[in-house]
Image (cartoon, rainbow, N blue to C red; front, side, top):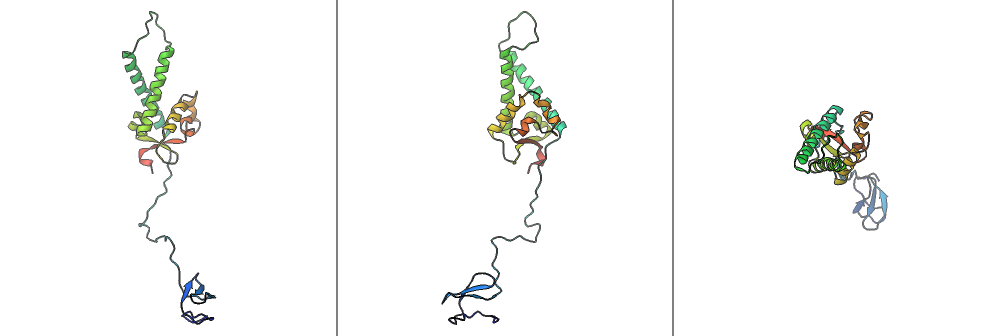
Length: 192
């Protein structure tokens, strides 16, 4: 059909329904015919050529440097030592006359509890420990979501694996307490 207006060949009606760019159906007799009306349906969404209209940057979140991780570790270790010393000064002291360098099992358990409570609470509540606050870093899930309590507990449990403290030195700063619970430590300004 070469005319600019569609007319059904079966019934002569000019009313039609557009199926595609070249197919129409007569509303009177339902005959489907080929006819190019020039109609182009609007898509559900359309990308704009205006770049500033929707400026989405796909930033890749990168882990922080190993140097900051080591600084975090020593600051947090110092804080945990102060908490333990504070507790020990008010807690029951071992009453022995001989000087030993061995920590009693009960004191070791208390130290482990302080260590766990510090890391789990600080990372779950704030996403960072005091060491991370000082170095302006933060713990996040690898999918950039907030940390779950299970991830924080997992990070703590992985920290007590033997040789875990040096695992990141051989794996480009990806320590076991990061890789196993699927977390990473990033700079504050590097969070999407």
